[in-house]
Amino acid sequence: MSEESFELRVVDVVEETADAHSISFEVPAGAEEQFTYKPGQFLTLAVPSDQTGVAARCYSLCSSPGDGGPLTITVKRTADGYASNWLCDHLREGDTIRMLPPSGIFSPVSLDADLLLFAGGSGITPVMSITRTALREGSGRIVLFYANRDERSVIFAGELSRLAAEHPDRLLVVHWLESVQGLPTQEQVRAFAADHASYDAFVCGPAPFMKMAVAALKDLGFPRERRHQEKFISLGGNPFGDLHDREVAEHEIEDAEHDPDDVSGDVSGDEGAPAAEEDQPQGPVKLEVELDGEQYVFDDWAPGTKLLEHLESKGVKAPYSCREGECSACAVRLLEGDVKMLHNDVLDDEDIADGIRLGCQSVPVTDTVKITYH
Ligand SMILES: Cc1cc2nc3c(=O)[nH]c(=O)nc-3n(C[C@H](O)[C@H](O)[C@H](O)COP(=O)(O)OP(=O)(O)OC[C@H]3O[C@@H](n4cnc5c(N)ncnc54)[C@H](O)[C@@H]3O)c2cc1C
Image (cartoon, rainbow, N blue to C red; front, side, top):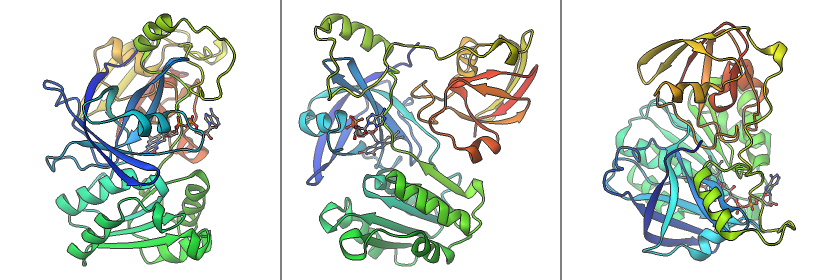
C-alpha cells in the first residue's frame, strides 16, 4: 500500500554553498491542505533511479509555514550518495518531481517556548524552519549552536546573521567551526547548554554530533519530553509502491548485478516478519486512539495487523511516511496495553521505555491497547 503522492513543480533552485542546493516547490491547486506543515517537518521525494524505479529520500523543509513563501528543502550532497547528488545535479526550475506530503514530529509543541537548537551541517534545515517560524509567530528566546566543518560550508550564514541582528533580544547564534575549534566535545556542549537548561532542546546533524549533544543534554538532566532529535538516514524501503512497480517494469532491470549508486535497499514491498504466534492475542483487540483531538474506539483489531493499516482500513487519517519503521512520522505513545514493533530503525531504548512506538510497524500483544498521537 502507498500513500497518495503528488507531482510538484520546482519554482526556484538556489546554490547555498558549493555542495548544498535549496529547492523550492509550488503546491498544485487543490493540494493546499495536504501540504500544510509544521516547522521541522519533512517531505519524502521519489528520486528517479534506473535500477529500482525510485529511491525514496526524506528532506526537511527549511521554509516557514505561514510566511507566504514556497515549500523549500535544502539538499546537501552526500559523498557517493545517490539521491542527494541526483537532486543537486538534475532538478532545475520548471522540472517536476513526485513526493509525499509533509510529515514528522520534530516540531516544537509551543512556538512560545524557549528553544535550544543544535544543528550540525545539513541538520540546520529543520532547525532553520523552526527558527524562522518561532521568531515570526512565537515569543520565546532561541539559542542556536551551529557546527560546521569550515566557514564555506555554513548554510544560511547570511540569513542567520540578519535574523540575529533583527532580534537581538530573542535570537543568539553561536557558530562552531571545526577548522578553527576542532570538533565540539560533550563537555563543551554541556557547558554551553548549562545556561539554558530549562529550554526545549532540538538536535539535528551527523550521527556522532547528535550522540554527543544528546549525551550532554542528558548529563544536564534534560527530560525526554524536552529533548528532540531528527535522524537523517536514507530510507531503505519505498513508500511509492505504484511508481516502483510501474517504472521497474518499464526498465526491466537488465543487469542484476549490484550498482554501487543504488543504495535504496529493499524495495520488494516486504511487509516485515509476522509476529510470532505466541506473542499474539487470541482474538480481536480493543483499540482506543487519540488523534488530532478526536477519540476512536474499535473492537476488531486483528492480531498480526499493523496499527497504521488497521486505522487506514477504518478511514482514520493517521500520519506516516516511510511505512518501513525508518522515519518516525507515525510515532505514537502507548497509554495502555502493549504492542510489538516488527521493525524499528529510529527509536532508541529510552524512547521505547517512554512508551513511544511506530504505528506503521506495531501489532498488538495485549487484548486492549490505548494510544495517542502527539
Ligand atoms: C527525516 C529526514 C530528514 C532529512 N532531511 C535532510 C535535509 O534536510 N537535507 C539533507 O541533505 N538530507 C536530509 N536527510 C537525509 C536524506 O534523506 C538522505 O539520507 C541523504 O541525502 C543521503 O542520500 P543519498 O541517496 O545521497 O545517499 P545514499 O546513497 O543513501 O548514501 C548515504 C551514505 O550512507 C551510506 N548508506 C546508504 N545506505 C546505507 C545503509 N542501508 N546502511 C548503511 N549505510 C548506508 C552510503 O554508502 C553513503 O555513504 C534527511 C533524512 C531524514 C530521515
